[in-house]
Image 1 (cartoon, one colour):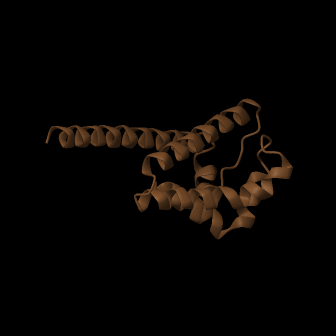
Image 2: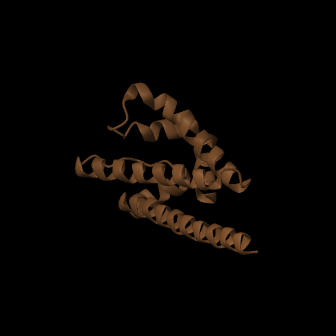
Length: 138
């Protein structure tokens, strides 16, 4: 979740650059790009904040996981169409990765983040189940 918070903060720190990177996305209609520039980073910071404050943790996991899976799907579709999108998620870090490693790094990184979220969700669900079972026995 800290990576999601970081992504949101990096986007908010340079909205003009994030808007520029969205120009490479053919799946996002031009009429929605301005809203995405503002809403997406605010949502990322908000959801990470909920998680850090232990408010609606499970729900924030599922929303962030859904966002990552939607992003991975969109990247795959764009790559199949032959138009590699720019991510812009982590500002200068993304710029460096694109120059040195290519677009597949973006997809791999997002898939890894989704995997970590799934694993941590599974662990937290198991811990909650064990805790409720102990309370019911005592």
